[in-house]
Image 1 (spheres, rainbow, N blue to C red):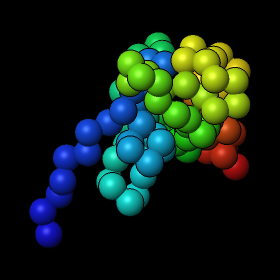
Image 2: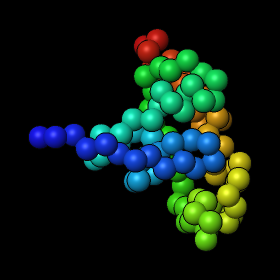
Image 3: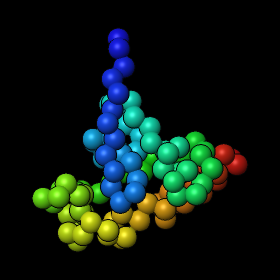
Length: 95
């Protein structure tokens, strides 16, 4: 079975699959390494993050449905979400 190349989407500097997941088994996408590196982290094995419900404006930019903003730090605060996922991964590794 041939693998297909997934075209990631960019939402506020982070990459996700078309299902809005950083790690997706449905389309075999994993954007954790790229996102970790972009936000200044060394890549580690951690849970993936997911984008909240989004829509696109007429310019093709993604905005959160909750606040209607393209740069919504509350919904698109990826660095904070990645930091939490990394802390959980490290804690789980210590058990």
